Figure 1 (cartoon, rainbow, N blue to C red):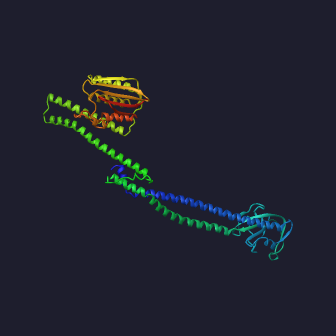
Figure 2: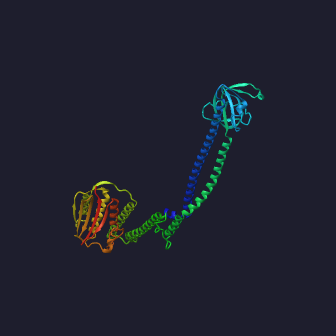
Figure 3: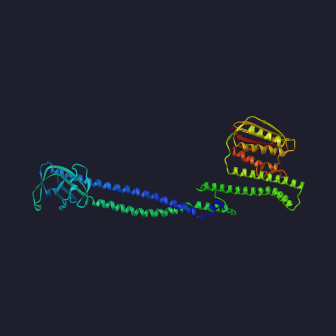
Length: 471
């Protein structure tokens, strides 16, 4: 089973579940971040509003104090100090960072250990401190020369002070902020749970076309009669995926068909020489070969093994080209390559009438593979035409490309073969000479050089043209 088969046969619930989980988790995470952000903003904003409100109360109380102790240098009774502020406010008088008297508006005297409060700077903005175990906002005003007359019940007497401090209890404000945080946390958890459940349902419903596409793809892959992908529904989000998947399935089917046909043709091509070699070997083992017959057998065996080796080499080359193995990219003069092939033919086929008409035509490519292209084209023309048939090879540059034309005056190619002449194992002769891979190799090598090859119409004979990009 191939990797593609394994992916197609995986249970249908796995991919949607993985996608659904990621989407739900992503949506929940986004909502969580939004809720946390909104909660932080609301808590900070409420806290600041309450602080500003407390500071306004402190400032208002300090203004009242200033109206009662002005002008400086007067005397104020402790009961008068208490009456300056509302009952929920604390007022105190300090001298040299020591609180000398501190009373609540409700006449309940707080403790005297108030060094932190005494350090509040007169005239500065209110600050937050702890007074009598309670969080308060404290402000102070300067009262130089002010004398506080103490209550007789507390021992009486007078004390000089240089500041009067006012504190507003913010315990309830903090409780409000704490309750808000608790409510937001609880509401956020409930909302997250609800949204996660709703998101799971919505995502599940939204992925229904993907599940349908997966089911259709499995049916198509299993070749279920009537099965097809929903490529005719462009309004679906999965349309492009369906088109791409159908193209992939089509390409896979075509590739499997090509491989199947290639294996069948290759086995057919190899069967004949193997049968001949096996026949001669069997005859030799039976003692039926001696003398001249043995020599003739060895010649035939050598010829058939050479044929098989050539066939295997061509199939290996086609396989490498199918895998897009990069070729060399060197400057090559195609005219020189054609001339080299013509020189070789003078030795291997001295009776062939090969006429070369070339001009310098530089290209970028693999010289050995281009040499093979010319060999195959010219060799085909010589091999499949009657002896003495003229074969013309022309090379010329034209409009950014280089044209290689191989023209012969032979009988031409049968009409039924013209459309598949460059296919693998395509042969038109009844005798079946050749491997049927020569022109297939030509097309593959030329394509690897970003060129093209075509069979042109001709009144007589055969005209093959190769087009390569000029250097």
